[in-house]
Length: 65
Image (cartoon, rainbow, N blue to C red; front, side, top):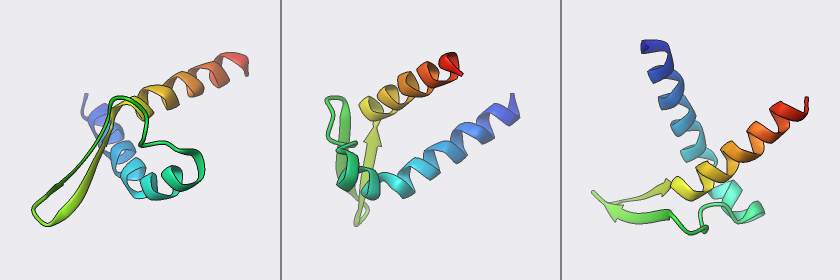
């Protein structure tokens, strides 16, 4: 259980770090269900819609391979 929690946290941190690059090149972060807000003097992204889209793409690639 702890391993899965660590994997999820690391994946969210990785996606947060790559959010600007993915938004600029692929348009992720602007899908319905993606939220961006400013709190504590910092911009925060909650890419729920993009995460679902990436999960579906990863599942299709995994099934294809």
